[in-house]
Length: 70
Image (cartoon, rainbow, N blue to C red):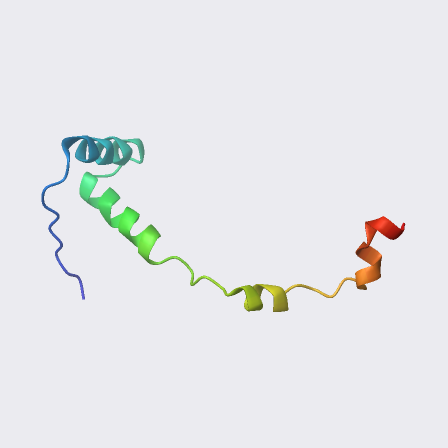
């Protein structure tokens, strides 16, 4: 379901920057605003350090990476 959103009290320089960015992308300021919100708010969920580490491939033994012994 679509919802209307009104943003008040925006600094003129921010509104101008939005209009310029929109023009550079060939869309209206309203469409640009929607795209900015979509991009920022629908980012993929951040993974925990444990998730990142567990997804790393097993590529060797710890001694393979010990540069001081080699």
